[in-house]
Length: 80
View 1 (cartoon, one colour):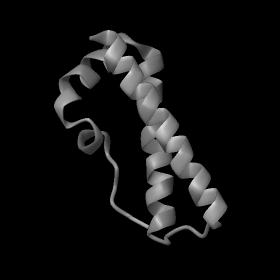
View 2 (cartoon, helix red, strand yellow):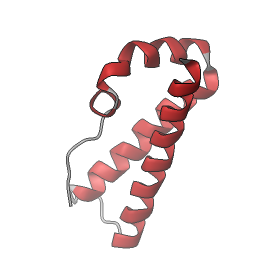
View 3 (cartoon, one colour):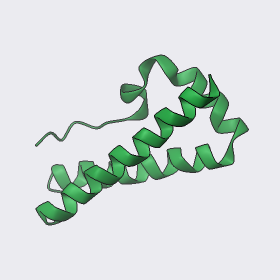
View 4 (spheres, helix red, strand yellow):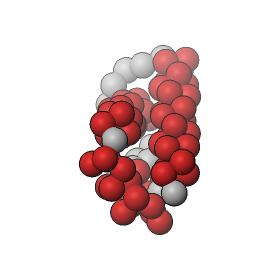
């Protein structure tokens, strides 16, 4: 299991300007970014064993992070 942080700047390195612009323009997108950071922090803490969670709970967090990341990618694609 990887405990490498999956920050948005790492996940979308070529789209940072688009993320910033859409964040200002779309409150729902801004909320997605907050949700992503929150879930990503939980995944990182679980993978680093800073928080005691079951493997199932850790897997669910990873799936949640992926779903949010997909929603971010879709919003960025739509905004282009």
